[in-house]
Image (tube, rainbow, N blue to C red; front, side, top):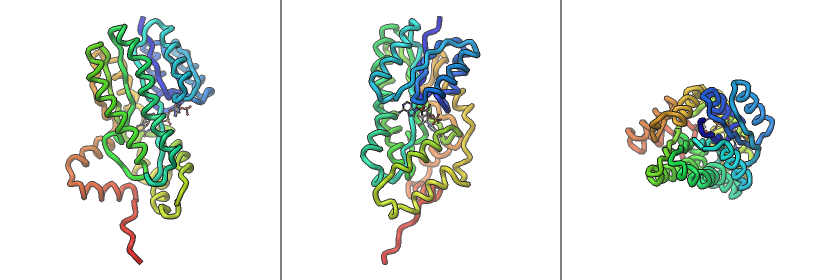
Length: 286
Ligand SMILES: NC(=O)c1ccc[n+]([C@@H]2O[C@H](COP(=O)([O-])OP(=O)(O)OC[C@H]3O[C@@H](n4cnc5c(N)ncnc54)[C@H](OP(=O)(O)O)[C@@H]3O)[C@@H](O)[C@H]2O)c1
């Protein structure tokens, strides 16, 4: 019998779609996210394709929730994999995002996945096998304006994942990173909601905030987000292939932006990014 796969952030987007694809492959699942109804609906879909599933509603930053998730996976006998997928983007100028918001960004996107790893790593070590797949982002390799805290969280996750990979290889644990570019999930609407939490001197950043809103909700090239299918296929591969790779870049736009960052002189690259994200130029002194 296959070991269980834990999927965090399974009520929507990549997590929900991955759960249904994985269920067809015969792995028992433990799914978690905050919205209970949405999570149970994903659970029902998993059961409808013959999958075994336990759904645990809760916030991934909550210690008791994380422990319940891992206990539920242990109840299936073995833990095959942990997919650290839950996450969100906290938008806003670096100098304006409040302390509670930037701490929350790090709690959800960095510390919670690390805590999940700390719970499953000893079990996987004992098994002599297991895998951890962390959903990062192209924003874990490059930085864009108005998403500084999100980019910082994904950079931190990437760095920790790279160290982890070398540290657990000897125990038979595979570690992979998924780096999507913009993909059409609920991510953009969650980010737009989070943007409302930004306080402080919004007037000074009016143009920046309008440009960000247009990028995320308006008629902008970045709205040309990729369909989630390709990324979900890659996540399934990382979770199930015999020898998964370390890094998977899943969208053309994400790959293109990274290559541009490596090839272009720094000043050109900055200008391109500022233009794409509609950042205003330098203000004239009055
Ligand atoms: N879509 C993109 O453009 C894109 C690009 C690069 C990377 N990513 C990354 O991909 C991952 C999945 O995002 P997605 O695109 O699938 O977005 P999504 O559709 O918004 O899904 C995010 C999932 O994370 C869960 N989640 C968020 N905060 C949580 C918390 N505090 N506790 C527990 N669960 C939480 C949400 O469930 P609840 O709201 O029910 O809790 C939801 O199931 C994220 O790590 C994101 O950073 C996305």
